[in-house]
Image (cartoon, rainbow over the protein chains, first blue to last red):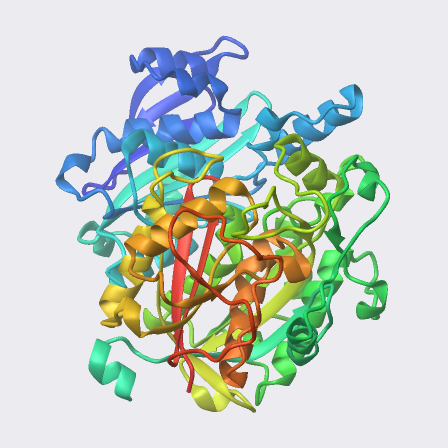
Length: 200
Length: 381
């Protein structure tokens, strides 16, 4: 199973697959995202300030965009449209619990209580001035994301879109990232995207 | 047809306004109160247990009469707006496949976070609630993109209609004030004492307000019982600069304005009214003044509505767009409440007495955390 014209990255069950091939796996408890960060040889200190949701979305973007000829696009031609089920709920609880336990609200945690912060982190890292959106769906919704891509392309608002699904539940990470261009989109169907997502 | 011939953009109409905010529960009532210079912000002793002197904009319980079983304040607000908006249409098109509801919110039912595992906390609950309550033909889309959520929902709706994915889209924006948001903004030192003063020399921060609002966008102007206006174009752009502070150069906002006006072949000088974000924080308002100057908008009559009902977060883009359209219709633009003395580095034509728009074009902008910005252009008919 492959999406021949699109770069894609799947992060699930402590494994990273890029374009359908196993890229890396780390089975130790608790340090998966940091291990991936080290594995790709990144030096980006801001990574360690991010919450797990942003780290997951950031790493997915990193591994997908570095294989997507990003440099061939103007800085406002690439949109980032991410989605998930739980918004920033895990960090919401962390923020609220720390407020209740210490009586002091943490500004550093509060900033990450919006899901689109991870999109902001990606735009900063890759200097992307294009369109953004963050959609909340019950499960990975390929049809909705493809619809968004088609609507952006039809409106000449983007030439490519990085779509993402990022769900974090404690030590479990579920990420899926696809770089979709205005020419490759025709070959994609919601079914083919969903099949690849469900394959891992 | 004039718009189509000029710009090549197919028509999208916007109307069927609904609103619930601290100042009232119909667009006319709210706008009348704004014209009288009233504010819905009030002082409370330790609001939601948070140590702040910042006033808050709360919705009176009397505005939300029909309680549905197990439903939250926000859900009742959204349901009421849905009903109000649909009552202004010839029929309810959202029970069919070609109709879509978009819900714009930053935090949904976050006021329920103090209960362990309340099933109403995930944002997906809003989608389920609306679909079940109104037998909707499609699962509602949820946009959660910080403080541009509402305006981004409107832009997304228009794009989906132009791409022929749907014929009619209702955009609902809603957020409530809670201990969660109030304590967070207090921790960021972003709350003003008393009431906010957007663009004023002595501004010190924001007020939080709660609201829900609805608008319907459609490719068919006969859907609306009463008047409707035209959506022309809109875009979003990221600053690529900082996750919680606006760009010093207004880069993303400037770009989103340029990318909104250019495809419509409308110049900055043709804009008759600008409804800005104007939160009342030092950095946001200064950033906007820079972006507006770079975009050639310094002479356009501009206001911020935050002094009337506070920053309503995910609802802001919807509520401020529909009240802006109300002002365009009446040809009476409200004063930028709280503004007294020039307090940004670039010139702005801030509205200090009720004034008429200088043309039929209305531009709405918004900016938010995550470095996001959005702009949308409308034309009154």
